Amino acid sequence: MQQSINPATEEILAEYEETSGDEVHQILHDMSKSQREWAGATLHERSGRLMKLAGLLEENKDAYAELMSDEMGKPLAQGVGEIEKCAWVCRFYAERGPMYLEDEAVPTDSDQKYMISYRPLGIILAIMPWNFPFWQFIRHAAPSFMAGNSIILKHASNVGGCALAIEKLMVRAGFKDNLFRTLILDNKKIERIIHHPAVSGVTLTGSTRAGSLVAQQAGKALKKSVLELGGSDAYVILDDADIEQAADLCVTSRLINSGQSCIAAKRFIIMNTVYDAFAEAFRARMQEKKMGDPKDMDNDIGPLAREDLRDSLHKQVQKSINQGARLVIGGKIPDRTGFYYPPTILENVEPGMAAFNEELFGPVAAFTRVSSEEDAISVANNSIYGLGAAVFTRDIKRGQEIASRRLEAGCCVVNEIVKSDPRLPFGGIKQSGYGRELAREGIREFVNIKGVVVSR
Image 1: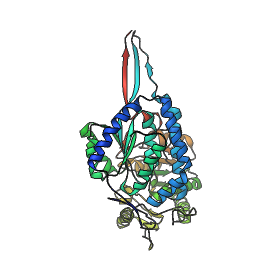
Image 2: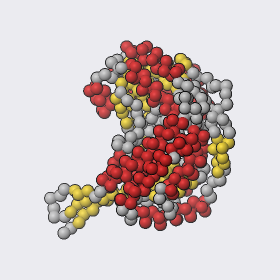
Image 3: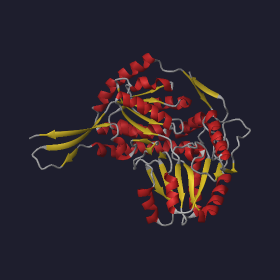
Image 4: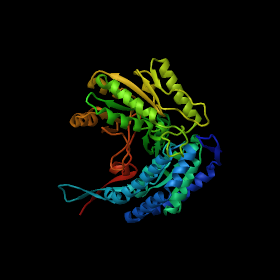
């Protein structure tokens, strides 16, 4: 039995029976036949389903935003934005997918015809997290369905309502006859599904620990896997940065989803000459943000999704202080109902401290002072993670050079926040995972990239 608990009120919203082993086997058996039929559908037919899905998402965005707010504490306005982004990625692949999947001719000086063909793999297991319950799934589903695959979803245990709402949504959009199914399952039972002969690949968005386990299981089963894992994104503030712009964007990034985002800004690497000005501007903006009921549109920060996550974050803050970091604001668990944690700033954070080495999954910012550009880049890259990174500078050429060539991450930006975008490949390096989602690269992750030779 899985429970959905409102993190703002601590009330039990619903309980869900787990899918039995026999039910899983029957579901996969039924999906295999449906997937083979779907693989024979035209690209035009697949595009039409995605367009329908986009429309339904937009029509129901307020209801889905409220569901996310109830189950994991997302502020309502951010929930609406999440659903709108889901509609965008559906339309993006409906329009661009056929081009990405076209057969490609390969130049040759022989009489033979060389081609590259992109064909679906089959059933893909999607293991998804709670922090963006709709977006994380839809950003995988849109390209995977467009490519001719079918999907079986194992969602996080605390967002069972979202998982089942997604299943109803997919059916309404025309993905019927077992093209998509949701499983309510304990994580311990995932390995059995990965090894099931009907499953052709697995994608996971989640923690580095979970990714490592799934990678081992997929490797043992010789199944394709894509992993988007944790991050400790470094935002580098150079000596010529626009301080007001940098502070605005850095606070926005740090507090997205109440700080519960793998690509939120977490470590702030600040050059000496602008440190005081940036630190003051950042602190002032953090203190302006309102924490409270996520359904109140005036609030910027809701509760963390679960009590254990709130408590783990607080332990990281306390450990960092004991290791020598200085608490500037926040850092105390509020005496109130709900799993809230206040906007928090730690200064004097150095390599080796919890706030530097570990991912802070909540509204906690870690400041590190450096004396030069070289030191800033070295400190930014001194991490087991490599998901995203940012640099702030008025010298665009300087910023582009640092972002494109020197920062070690899958997505690097200049004078902007790191965010996923359907037009660009998204994913990490190091312990932030491997493989890519979105763009052309994302739709080609779960296809058979087939070489074809035709003799005349």
